[in-house]
Figure: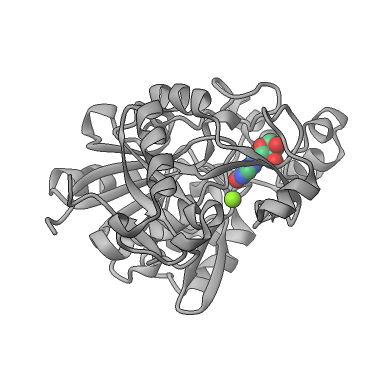
Length: 338
Ligand code: IMP
Ligand code: MG
């Protein structure tokens, strides 16, 4: 296979929890990703299964499993310092992770407010304090990473580093968090998160201009889930979700996820707004159990291939990555075939 170089944005399609962590961890190993910038904040948990361990990462980029990857937290991100230090320790990445000086900081009072404010409660926020921290940043009174003593040894100019890597034709991933339907601008307002989650915003939070990006990989799950309040078209009862094997609990908060079948109309709109150049579909094995751990597309049952074809028709882009199990390598990679 030809080495994939250049800059890829990985963005979530619907209400998050599509398996971005898994897809990104696969890219890390397969493409030998040189630099990864994580955007967003601690409200998102990206799950990575590797060597028999499961990591639910709220801060550290999902490419950490590739030892040579430089890990960066972008200037648009919001850093929860204790969680950052805890994950750095758990993943053993001290020495190769950097936090942009301009990233802002979530403080304990932000989380307290997130949990006590009636309006925020009614939206079903995660309670990490991200909304109140973003508010503080918009007010221009937030602390930045450069103001925090515990981050001193981690400070970096992530923008300079990532742009230098792109100039040098290195392999770069910009790691998005949440999904487009949780975007402050494009999602199901007011039941959304406190930032834009589109591919354009992922670039902006990383300090990478849109013209420098080569690929926008939008990650879909084979069915839809949502945590927190707000409409979910086609929502199933918990019993039906359990019967279908779609019932999930959140990697970060442990909350029950609501679920619904894949929505092709919404997929069309999501692909348009993200400017998708390709798509991933995860958990195909949950819809079609005989796909479990498959790595060869041609051996999938016809109905599974028909489903993928329908996703391609709706989004107008090729489904290049198909997830068939939880492990980082349970993937069908169609990038080298046409
Ligand atoms: P907040 O982002 O904590 O303010 O929560 C706002 C809404 O976004 C709530 O419905 C959360 O459940 C949802 N949300 C935030 N982050 C994630 C995520 O990573 N996955 C799924 N839902 C999320
Ligand atoms: Mg998640």
